[in-house]
Image 1 (cartoon, rainbow, N blue to C red):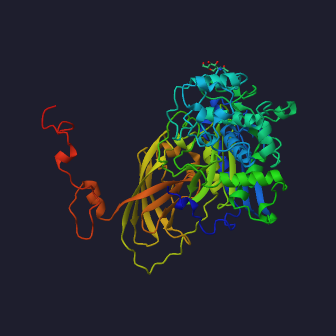
Image 2 (image 1 turned 180 degrees about the horizontal axis):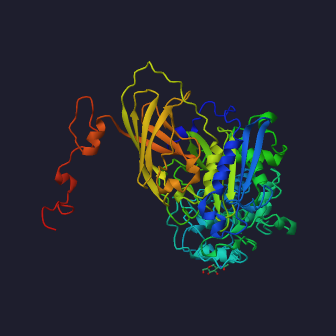
Image 3 (image 1 turned 60 degrees about the vertical axis):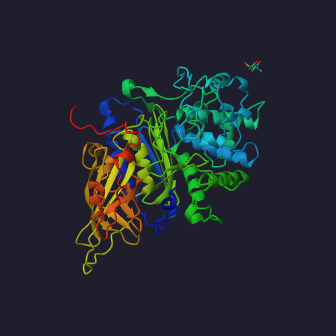
Amino acid sequence: MKLALFLSVLPGLATGVYGDSEEWERELVDAWTTIGDCSPETGICEGCGFGAAVVDLNGPDGAETRFYNAGPGEREAPWGPQDTWEIASITKPFTAVATLILEAEGVVTLDSAIGDFLPCNWTEANSQVASVTLLEIIQHQSGFPAQPPDRGPSVGGNPFAGYTEDRLCASLLKLNGLPTRGRYSYSNYAYGTLGYVLTLAVDSENPPDYEDIIKEKILVPLEMFDTSVTYDEPGWDNAAVGCSRGLARGQETIRLGAYETLQGNGALRSTLEDVSKYLLAALYVDAGMPTPIDESVFGGLPPASDEITKLYDALAIAHSLENAATAACTCVSNWCEGLLCPLPNPNNEFITSGGFEGYSSGGVGTWRKSGDTGGYSSRVAYSAAKGRAAVAVDTCGGCGSKGTAGSGAQRAALLLVDGPPVLEPVESMEDEPAEEFYILFTGDAHSHNFPSVAQVNVEVTSTEDPNVVTVALSSSDGTGATSRAVRAAGVDGAWIVEEPIFMGTGWGASSDPFNQLDIPRTLIISNNWDTATYQDMGADVHLAYVCDGRRCNDRILGNNEDEEGFPSLGPPEKSEDEMFPSGRVGKKRVGGP
Ligand SMILES: *[C@@H]1O[C@H](CO)[C@@H](O)[C@H](O)[C@H]1NC(C)=O
């Protein structure tokens, strides 16, 4: 578990250095409008639009929320901060946090088994499904398939419509096994089941609706009155319509059909204004709930109440490593559903008992969760250490999707929570002679080009100026380039990378308007060169030391002869018998085909 870096906080980041970032945020929103695959010329429907909110604790009068809405190309924004959109899988943390609150109330425990609540005939079950616990579901370790196996046709745009308790029980009993149980494998089916289990746990005879629980425990205390699964007619008037893509491009898509059991996985709609209320509270909890509440920092928090106290306590657990699973991955677009993500997670990401994904950017711990449905693609991200939170969404079905990095809106959320670059270069110290060195780091990154992991090599070479190095980044997904990097003032081991070399200059880079922006790009090298983080596009790639100086030649050429002062780092030499003990397998062929 490598969480040391995650938990470290760069000095000065929480003290207002972000300052006036509105202009920078506007440039980022403008960049979104130029994403090619949602330009009006593609025939995308009129509802296609982008929206974002940034909660900035360092506003002139304390917490300030800035809202942005735009349409693609030259189009006007089709909707605003008070219109609802499908938050989709961002519903999941609400389900998980409600579980934590119900645990505090003694209604369930994280170790409760679903079989204790669901009235299925478990003697007919083909697997140990009844023993799956609430925590296993929260952390996507239940072994459930990604989607309900026998989902029927969409009704009113809702693929989960008509999924009654009978059908839920029938499908659970039919599961032949839980082959991924105990290992991270993202499941909508499991989270939907969890939401339904909560309703039965509250009252098995007359279960409330899923949304009643979420409203009582979370939405009403936070005064998120426009967030719901169902709406009355005036409520639906404020629904931002999503746009279909692919073969249905030009058409609208929106879930109007009623849900049955599987709401906890993604049924909620919300607004930028409501999500911002949630983000402010989350920042307050992430900051350690300082009391008394300083209105000049956290102005706008909801009024104190028993419900709010319970919610904050649950969020504090949800932001902690208590019960957290470190073998976890992020989930964007279609990338994670039904696919096994590579573990251990190359970005040292983890998932908590509140369903939040922890990751780092610039060495600073940050929380995130994304959501995708047919017509909507969104993400929230926040970090008290950064003093910022962001939500971004498109109602275009995920424009500008890039490999495992997600849609343009999802990548925008990560950039918006980072904010503009804050590190300053050191003053030049020309008198000091430069020490010559060369270090090679390697690591795995979520590819921005493909739905896969890419191996990234980062070479750092000294220059004549001790405050300047050359950073060469190469990646197995075909990106990479070389840049100057300048030593950052005030943060040991931090270098400001001047060019966007993570995405290089090739096709992946040139199709991404965010890659051209002035965003934080840093290389932070640990004191003993053991590890490093490479920050670009709103997240860190975690790197490990491979070699330095002449030792690299030994590694690369397989030369195991010790040179004076340079211990061999290659594998110990083995005889052929040791390498092929059976004497049959893998014998070298000499000559012939
Ligand atoms: C549960 O399943 C068993 C085995 O099929 C059956 O014998 C029993 O009658 C069922 N119980 C109920 C309440 O349906």
